[in-house]
Length: 116
Image 1 (cartoon, helix red, strand yellow):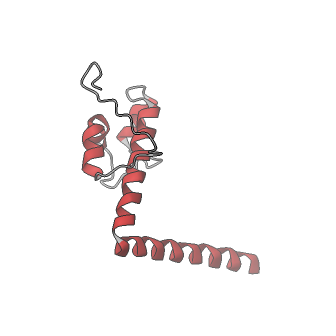
Image 2 (cartoon, helix red, strand yellow):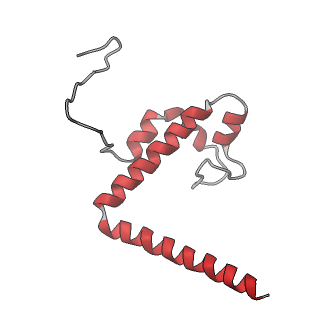
Image 3 (cartoon, helix red, strand yellow):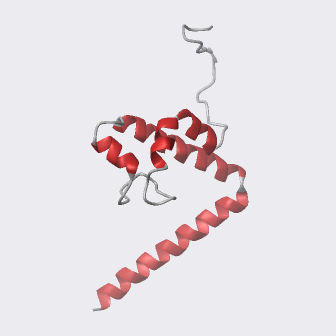
């Protein structure tokens, strides 16, 4: 069924969920306002979380960007990354290896701290 504005309403009986099947560029295109702001960030790999000089966070603080919109953008990026890891076994193994190394480093830090 076509809704006003061109959106489609699809009835999928028995289907419990829909998943993203896209890449990060599609999310960037859907959130072009955030993408434009991110070009002004101090760091190229800014996650728009708590980095200094983040133009996106400054826009949220200044009321030029809705905080919920940023949260939706970040959630969709996490979902796209998750789906990509499911399809790319080597990439998933690399992420798992890096998390394992980080966990070991944190445990060693706390173990060393308790010795003093």
